[in-house]
Amino acid sequence: MEVIKQLRQREIRDLLAQRPIRTQQELAAALRDRGFRATQATISRDVAELGLIKSSLDGVQSYTVPARVTEAESTGEERLRALLRDLPVSVREAGLMLVIRTLPGSAHAIAAALDRTRWSEVVGSIAGDDTVFVAFADRAALQRVRGRLASLGH
Image (cartoon, rainbow, N blue to C red; front, side, top):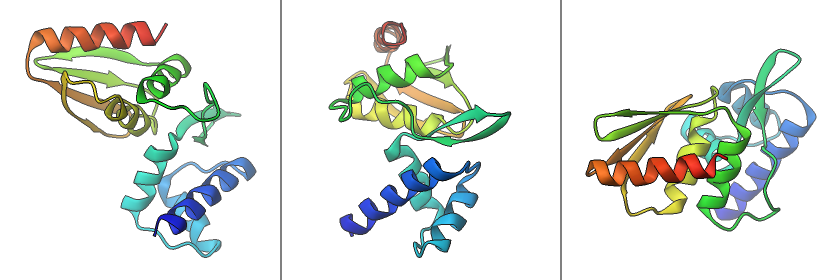
């Protein structure tokens, strides 16, 4: 199964290099045209794992593979740093959560990178299309991570 996943993700990168793809449904259809069948959940995981973001080209928001800090980013923190530098992001507190807002289609990449950091302060995270909710056990943990996020974004 891992080989099929690698082939599918390579095909996704090739598709994005060839033409703009605006939605996960459009991506699934393009993959079907090339012989790959994938559920919406699989496409969503691929988008997160590949770190795809939405960017505007000629006024059209479409998926792109973000520029890498290095060809093989080795840590979640490096990936998170690259995303926070490349994307417009706002961070607000809500109780014992941080609410991270970004461009539509980019929240999964941020949440996946945050999960890869394995910061002990983070209880868990959940991502929508343009928003990530990050939960903490206490305010001190929240403040430490907020400070880290701020320093990574500069």
